Length: 395
Image (cartoon, rainbow, N blue to C red; front, side, top):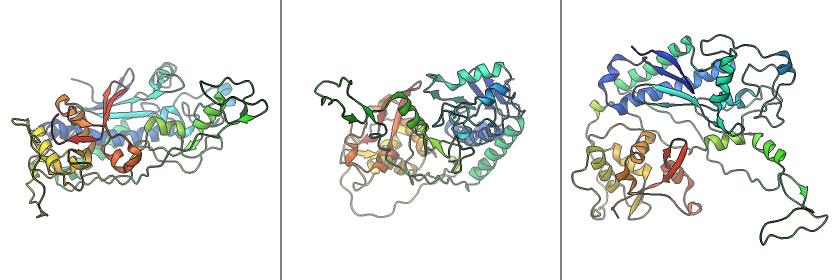
């Protein structure tokens, strides 16, 4: 039989075998929903264990040497210095890559965890952690006590879901414009060779440039970032680390749309047809919206696209993806998909992708609408394509 609980992998670990017995009777989308709760809880618990200096078994990590403590450094703090008394592998506390690059994803059979790409080593941070594991600092896993805690959290949500009482509460997040980079550093440009058609430098005149060191300092400075499962530390745990995260992590994790409503999922067997409220007469449906003989999901998808009110459509020809999701959930027989799951279903289907469009000239659009409908198609770690709209008719 396969191992259960926390199982180490070459690049991280998996959690499997903790699901309720009846989960196997549900469709893959519902099973994936349960393992998404496992991911949420594990990210919080693992961050707590790392902040306490614990390894995959819940035991203290091998202490750092006196020489390392004396010259403790961190690539994630503005000064490049680390807290001498911080736990092993986390000299920059919450900014440290061991904590801030830890990530996970839900599958229909288990949850898997890994460490994201690190700019400074140009590789997954798991590569560095694999070296540390060889010398007694193995964090490729969650402690038995942590797994038990995660199971309780996920099972509690599952019980609420089964009874129809579960509700998602989105975190309050704010979309902020990136801070202006110009003017961060100053250096003489007397001997600088400028690009084609650029204004030539005048001897003695200073221009605003940034050295490599200034760029590094800039991206390491404290800044807000929305990282799943990790609180935004407002009080600096040590003067060298500063509060919050840093600009680099803001680029790694990106920004979340503020105020996005997460629909409360409902068990598939309790979903009942809803009566539509009488509204003003709508324009005649556009031809070719619903292709004949489509599979159930696609058929309901194109019905949802056709049902988006004209005052919410971007144009008569296409609609925002999150508005289509709103209409999809109202249809009888629709799967209780979250917005993220809905987007994933769209991106995974070549036929659907052929009827999707990206938002151009976003400066003239509401950034909240653009962010809420942002959908990605990935090939490995590479974003191959992005979309924001579904077209009402095929081209």
